[in-house]
Figure (cartoon, rainbow, N blue to C red):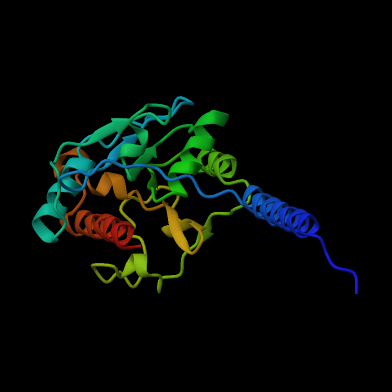
Length: 240
């Protein structure tokens, strides 16, 4: 029987090791890991108003977030950093420091391509966007969400969804604060890997319902419905 030389064995071993290394490298390059975003540890919950282009009034509902933060502090066990809201642009260095984003307005919403990419990265790595149509931003918002998530659709959530039961029981879904077109209020979502990353209320006007009572003159029961909806969204985002 012919003996195998030690040099042949070593050579064969090297070839096998190189082949295995190549396969591991090929596998890792074809399935890139999700980027890990380092978020600073904060002493309590914060919410950031999302600035956007296009001419819409991103700065509206000036008292809404302050009232929401106060209600969270008074009604829930959520530790709130302060009742002062923040405002942030997508391309700012601090953007990823705000896991919970609020977006509202009456006019056009516009994101640049880079803004859309950065917002998608934020939302798919643990961020959450609560958007509320003050009346008039629906068409542009939907278009921009398609730019952020080209492969996903805004889907209406059933009233059995946990977002309507995370703290308060809201068996009829979103509230109807203002009439607008007289259409029923609806709650839509973009879902990524089983998690709601965007929650969008339409024909509800939750933001106006969160305002100081003298601003719109809404009855207490309407403002309470809006507050319950907003608190539920926050609690859902913190536990999912």
